Image 1 (tube, rainbow, N blue to C red):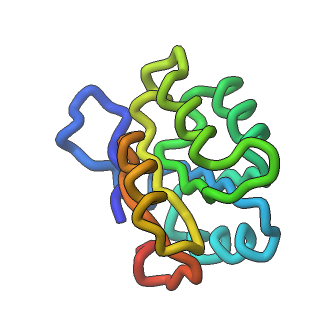
Image 2: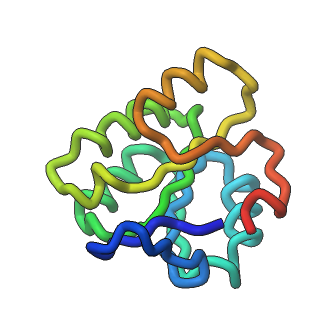
Image 3: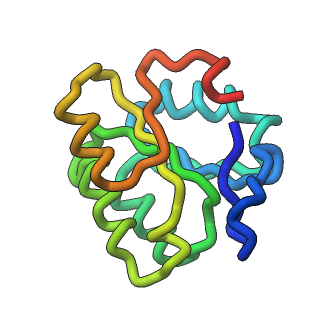
Length: 133
């Protein structure tokens, strides 16, 4: 898996090994599992257990992540609302942030809603190691 680069040359992908990945997942078990799966593959990992925490961290440091993996079903603000806020942020680096949606649902309506927000892809739970490498 390659995360797009933040450099001016958008044709050159950033290898996952040098990418900073933000994982937004409220279930500790799933968050820990994703972090273990990505450990040693991603350059840097950041975890957030809520959309509010993720948004706070991204607004505080807009270049924090090169790619985000966002669960749709979160307490409080859901993942779709988080992605909407990222896409309308004042920082261009956040508006262009590659986002992979994480969900346990195989729901076409959900896929369409997320696709309108210019996401980069979907991961369906349970997640296997293969899609992440």
